[in-house]
Image (cartoon, rainbow, N blue to C red; front, side, top):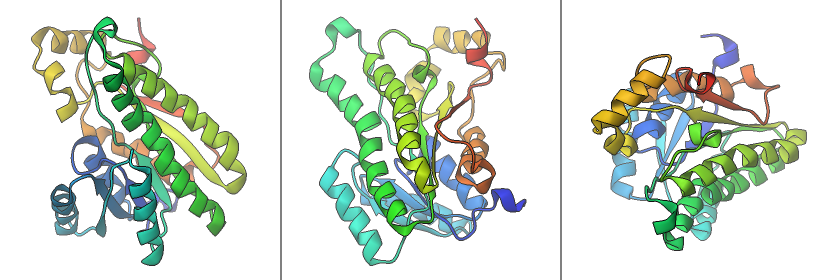
Length: 255
């Protein structure tokens, strides 16, 4: 492995990483040498994900909290502090989806998506950056955006607003934290074969549209995001800051 991409000796916290994209990112960073902190809201699910990584020979521990619970996030980081665990790499991956036309959308459902996908990323990044700044050794923050960071679709207004916000939050992080040698970037996944997208994958018309409209002619796989995550988590990206890299098979490049 090139030293540029070697994450040995570094600890990565990945929110929402018990399954799907989050777990694939955990596997990718672990393979590059990082110690992984698996996060989720349920202890059992976190323990199962940790066990899978350990069975594959990787260093992994659990970190249970809800990203929208500010007190729980602060308590989790205080516990990491007490155990002498410093987060060198944060991936803000936790997110939810909710589909409904805007004229039928309740404020509570709007707020739930915004809180989880955008405010949660701020809360966890703030706790991480405070400690990175205090240590004076820099760090990496990777936010997970979406195609909807750039383009809208009907019936997913809160998700679109949140992921658009992620793009700009990433730039705000770069603006404030770059002087502390913290690089904050984002990944914008395209249409990926995940549990969150089950309803779309099983919709024959939508599945056909994805395949026809994407130059790659297919859905992406979760593990195809890992290389970009390793790059953004490594020394290879030390002068990359405030960017969002779309991993979408070329979808945004065409009409």
